[in-house]
Length: 223
Ligand SMILES: O=C(O)[C@H](O)[C@@H](O)[C@H](O)[C@H](O)COP(=O)(O)O
Image (cartoon, rainbow, N blue to C red; front, side):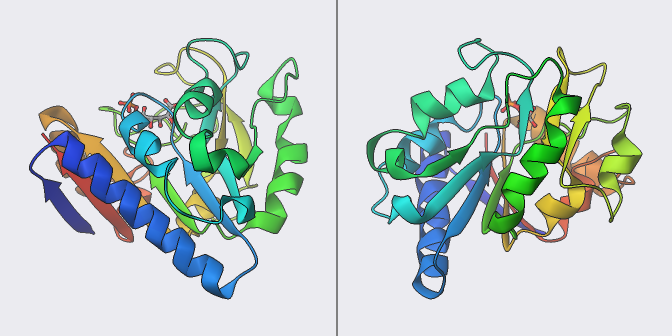
């Protein structure tokens, strides 16, 4: 694990957006397309705002969320809504977007179709992860109904998940897809998350799902 500490959140957002854009650009120099996987939640909006203006051939980039809450795209808890407002605008409006929310009655009905849609875009070029204070990442929550299956090395790419810490049913990319990314970044801010990260390092991934990604991740932290 590599830990980068920034003097403030603004510096973090600028540097991280720059780093992600460079990794995508470098990949596009040798490949037809690149895939960027991003978290929802509240922390990444400033990173997205900067990244959306990056001078990149966005028409060759596919964007996907690491997880989605099973709510309509205009719901205030929709991660897609956050993406449309902060990332899929400006230059990044040209990117292809794979929306995890299909409108099906339940996420269980959407997983197979989404996995097939995602397959040609793997491995992920860059994955940006977030983390909750309970050490979940994407929708891999400690204690979630299908956590063991979603953490297994042969897990299907996309799974439906329900957990006490999640307000609604979720859909999530699973451990093998996320950990198979070429570049892995983790964005955390504030003292509580720093403390949760330290706790996670000593735990098993089934207790602390973020643990499964730490060895290969660059962690970006600001107070
Ligand atoms: O849909 C979600 O909730 C996420 O994708 C989730 O994994 C998120 O990254 C963390 O919960 C951190 O969220 P905050 O940035 O809001 O603290």
